[in-house]
Length: 234
Image (cartoon, rainbow, N blue to C red; front, top):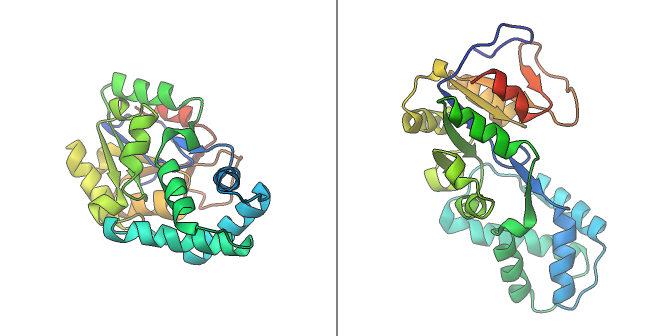
């Protein structure tokens, strides 16, 4: 069960982390990168407008699982819709391919300041460390580019393993990879539904990362404003 706020800490044999907005995030913004690539393809765009268009399309199309064979075309459809809102772009395909490749590189992403410290400390204390994320098949390339791959024991991307949070199946796969029982593992992430409720459904403890400050949620769900809170639990 999830650790209630104020409950005594206990040690875990495995710590699993979400990826986006937990270990790293887009910097400076999705809209800024879309505008940068658009400019290189001859179109001036307002980064904030592109950010708003992206968020609107993402919310309309949000999916938790994309098979590798489908992800490229899914992203093509989303990006085309974003750019159509911005007035369209000539020679869309070259623009899209440049953007798609860019978001697989470390240039777009920035680690949170405490990420490396926390991962190193967890492994240094003997915990198995894994990344469990709803992501397409580019996640491993991103993690390698950010230098995260040597700091974790495994990476599970939903598109690669065929199951996505909050389905308990992806957490069961993580437990198998870690070689631990559910009550020996903790998962931390920024989504109440996907990370906290999904992990709890699989029998793990969960820590809800609320970087912007406390959020309304079930009283029994433990919250943390920084990954450093994990250091008390491993």
